Amino acid sequence: MAKTASFAILHFSVALTVGWLVTGSWLIGGTIALVEPACNTVVFHLHEKVWKRIEARRHAVVA
Image (cartoon, rainbow, N blue to C red; front, side, top):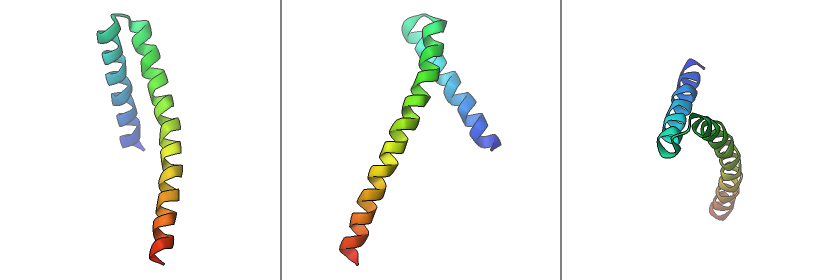
């Protein structure tokens, strides 16, 4: 759990810094740092669903 928390802090810091460097605004950088991981979470969930379907089809062909 500590490793996950550490990575989350690192990810937030990178997103905040990149957002600030690109826009020059800490507020926009912070917004990006909060919104981007939320979007990634949704995309990851959808990716997992598609991946499971592909694996199920692959196993059905082999069996």
